[in-house]
Length: 355
Image 1: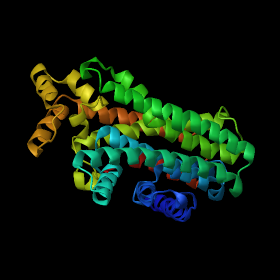
Image 2 (image 1 turned 135 degrees about the horizontal axis):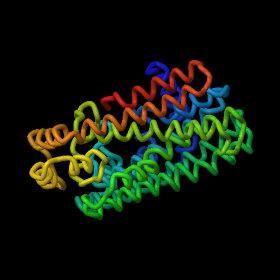
Image 3 (image 1 turned 180 degrees about the horizontal axis):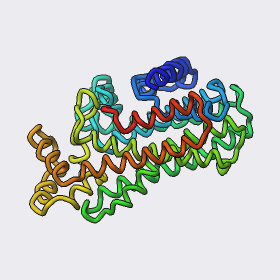
């Protein structure tokens, strides 16, 4: 599966690197920023889901490639904005977009630290905005690559519903959670948020591949709906693994700070489960760990111990496996071919990955 994922990555890399849309973005450092995340790393999971779901139902990679690239660029604009919201300084072992732009404008215009930080954030917001336009443009250009205009209109409508409205709503709920006492947030509220923030774009990817293959503009088509459900289950499993790695991962592998969710007091399923399952003393200790500017290795060891000893880490991993099983069951309802094999391998990867 990883070999096939690498092939998808090369195809997406080549398309994005040669695409004409970003060439007229001004100023030039905004263009550089718009290209940075899409061209520098990333797992390319979303493009793979588009292409492989299309192939699963008899479509071709040529038809799916531009919608797949659109999904990847869309994913990257959400990362740019997410890094601003979360105040994350790095992404993929590189400065986050707003940090890179802060450094750029400070050197270019001689701004103070505060002025540069604000202006860097402003330009990063614009970076995400222009990437969203790029994603829309890529999707619309599928009409030039074997996808009927009627289908592209259906895809674009679904794109706005899922990749924009539902995803942004999920992000907004996540931000709202940060304004509430963490103890007041229910586990099912977090699951609902994840269906938007993480699941919505993955759902679009699976549905888009199916709609292209079946030449339909109707997302209610049974095969389309079923693959959307597969992607939601796989996406939630992916996010649970992400939350786990945010505490138990390694910086060099993950490419972003460990403990970021603790610093923000983010209401992850892992944290909420630990607060509910830990004994009173451990619960109090865990609450005291939230919101620190930095975490030493000793701090992380304490948090990890509480999450393991309370059973929260095991519970999270069990839920992720249950979601992965659901995704596998759905896939196994489809005819056996190489694309089903790739998608099944992807599910396994999502819950075992280290980055």
